[in-house]
Structure formats: C-alpha cells, structure tokens
Image (cartoon, rainbow, N blue to C red; front, top):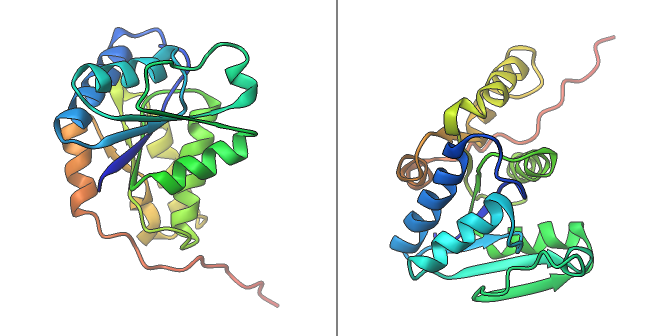
Length: 193
C-alpha cells in the first residue's frame, strides 16, 4: 500500500471531532509515507486532510473536475493536481491511483464514492480495501444498514466486510493490512417457478 484515497466532505461539519480526525489522518498518512489521493479541493475536511498531510511532509495528489476548478476550489499547494472533465473521470482516476480507500464524514458525494468503490470490490473489478473512520458514531447508521441488508438477503454474509469500520486511522490502516477480501462473486438468486 503506497497511496490511500480519502473521500470526505467539502464542508467541515458541525462537530470539531470531524476536523480533528481529518488532521490526525493526514498526519498519520505522512508519517507512514503514504501518499494521499483526494478530490483536490482546499475547503472543508478535504482541505484539512490535505493540509495536514503536507504539513507533516507527506505527498498529496488531487483530482478535480474543471467545473470546480473554475469556482476557485482547487488547492494550490499539492504535490500533483490533475484537472479532469467530469465527476466520473475524477472517481475513476482516484480509484486507479489508489491502493486503499478511507471515508471520513461527508455528505451524499462521500457516501456515493464509498458505495461505488465497495461495489467495485464486490464485482471483482479491484481487490483494494476500503473502510470508514467512524468519528463520533457518524457511520453507525451505515454499518447498521449493511447488517440489515445482510439479514434481508441483499448483501452476502461474506461481503459484510467490504466496508471496514474503525475509529482511528491507526486501527483502520491495521485492518487494511490484515483484511482478506471475500472471493464471493456477485450472487443473484434465481426466480422460483
């Protein structure tokens, strides 16, 4: 693992713990000499995790759609900044550049990115770990939903661990090093006649 993609909010949220965790994660990535890959913006938790990584001597690669560049959201102090034409191209490039994926708190975009990358694992498109930093219980509802979907037969039991859950970067990165991703192909129940 050399590069870690971080999905997170373009806002900082209401709790100071969210911003603190972004700073802690950035420092931990830099200390481990893991390059941060993220959405390229200078605002919210996105800007905070990038700033913390850079402040601790780490490398940061940003990927930003042109439409957001023109709104002056681009972080200007990154190691690399890739400007792409669309959100789809952004997500693809971030996935290709990364060896693992972490979601800090965020909104619909963060949730969408996390679910898409976990789905790509489920479909066998990559074998890279992903997980959430569950700051102040932010992702408790998502973890409960995944358990509910397993119980209801929409997610295979072996695929419950596609989204790992931890409360600190050290704990989550340790899980990434230990995880054995399930080799269960996408399963579909055939209709009964």
